[in-house]
Image: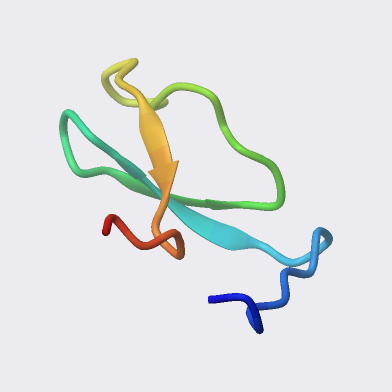
Length: 47
């Protein structure tokens, strides 16, 4: 994981923990636009 590079100006997919909605954005959207649940960056491993 240390060789992972992130481009801050690149769009990333974010997924809602509650409803599974996927949103692509340059910045963390904060909460889900559909249900208001917490979002996570799908490129971040859950390990």
